[in-house]
Image 1 (cartoon, rainbow over the protein chains, first blue to last red):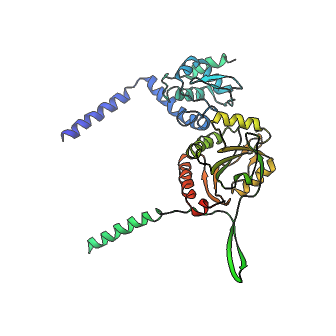
Image 2 (cartoon, one colour):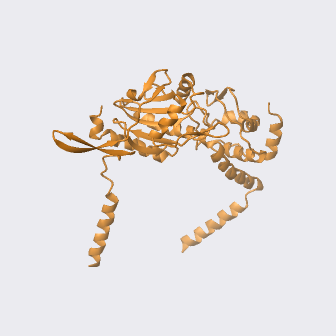
Image 3 (cartoon, one colour):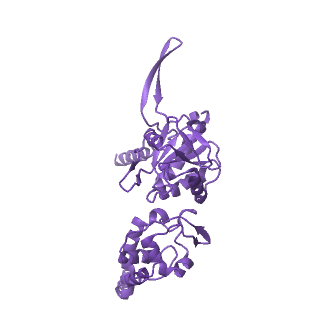
Length: 139
Length: 216
């Protein structure tokens, strides 16, 4: 009996806590879950289920230092791809091509929210507004 | 009486599950034809199995590789191209597990035929192998004549590659296990890690078959 009451209260608290998430957290959760599906469809073949990459062919997405330092150019890389540019990821050089991904700013925001908050990264939400701004500065 | 029935049910269920546990030989795939010969006055019927026909290719080191180069080897084959954006990275991520499991064994090889030989030159294949982390002579990446490779794919029981409007290649991601007699002993979806785990187990099973131990 006692156990039931305690677990009942616990459940109620959990629901309360969940429903009291701030708007930001809810948007983050939504972007993250849609982003995970985009990732599966467009990124996972090369970058791997756990963002582990593939040997020296495909870079991993686990290098938080790189991702933080290059946050503003990530949308450009996703949208326009890369051709023969040298990247140093996890202290290893990568030089191959990445194909351009035909995605809308909102999709880029979602997939980058997923990537930059998975695989050991924790960079918070990427909004469509941020993507719009960053895309105007692509070289 | 009830107890007896229950006991029988338990025994039957148990034995039903054990049915395949003792499997020591892999099936042989492909067409087969009976051949009747007369040996010492007796009529003997033998089965001739489909085998992988001859081919001429070059590997990532520039060495000429033919069907003969694989004599005395159990091998796994697949079809890929280095600029493949879709399933090839998954296939070779999984194939690396096979490579790591058998790279120390002399009579087991992996061969990947490029279906885009126009782009995938020896130099490109070498670079790809280096980046993949493949060294030595366990895993060969092969360049051959496109028509020959496409024709050969039929002998491996995979779908013949096709080119779509964008000049990309459509192909399936199978890994094919071939024994020392060049017969097909298994096909696996190279894009699924669990299928590739099964392939590794099957290679060990195959290696232990008497035909393979004595195989030439």
